[in-house]
Length: 229
Length: 229
Image (cartoon, each protein chain N blue to C red):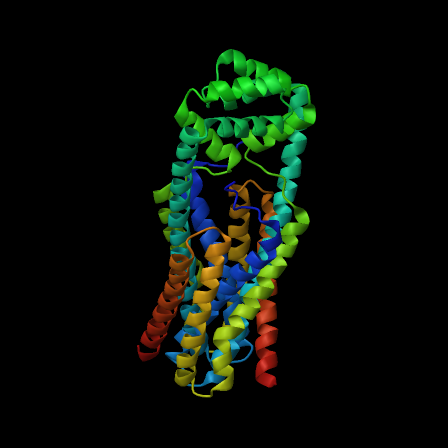
């Protein structure tokens, strides 16, 4: 009934929104920071694009490799559980009982459950994987696709705050337009991000805007401080 | 036996390592990218510090707010489960049975487990939270501390690739030193990061170095391309 997680159809949309709202924040703040120190938009654009390239690779490739590591980890633990179920079945049964003891089941019922579960080795191992080790079978392709989608969305998101600097030569003028389009975009993406992860949408949108504005403001002040120092 | 997760003592160390290896990657790549386009180290330092400020706020504050949202979400679901257990107990019992049906337990044993679990309302609700909804009670202070530690470590990590630019006036010369200290640091932090998350340490270290080098190389080429275009 209240399973707002694992809405498979919208997972790609969720990745797009996550990548975009992250992509909006850091390049926006970096460009704002540089505008506080440098009057030429050209350098701001160069720095912004370098950041977008670096950030999307770190995020996309990092996510991809983490996904592969997770698959390896799951498979090695799975092999181990199958071995243990063969080698020390009584000990594994005791572990099943421990899980249920924690939920207040009687000793005799714990034993019955463990005995019955032991009849189907695959389901027994699956139970141990999920409830003893807390591991769910990772979807290998899913992680790759997710990392790619987030990386690309980061690029698209990052281009939004940068575009005024491409169009307007003076960096301080460009900053005003950048603030306008980015804060509106952050609000929209924060709203959908919260909706899709089952959180209150309006307060979620305000939080995303707040983080972006604070990061940009702090970067601006810091860059100005360094350049006047 | 093989519970390499939740090693409480080293959680802070893990956060430090995660924040630092991330902090090393993006500011390193940004500085490398700018070196491909601008010969003065001063601008590279300004941009790098603006990025560090923006990234640490986005990461730290983002993590803090996400942690608070998670606590709110858990509490509202908890309230709902308590209400449902009171209002539609038979339906909730059927949900308990569904969990066990998936593991091949017989109908009669499913019923016994559901009946016995229903005797202790707290444990019943805890079971539903964990195994039906997949939610574990979040530790509120833990999330705050974790976000703070990661944010600060991001700053410390980011200063490593930037320090050569602070010391050496010519940005291309500074880039050589930055590559040297950063790639070594990425290897060391990648090694510990993998160790602490229970992954193969050497291949994990190589992956972290690879991501950093690729991000920096791509940012360098891209920035050079824009400036010559």
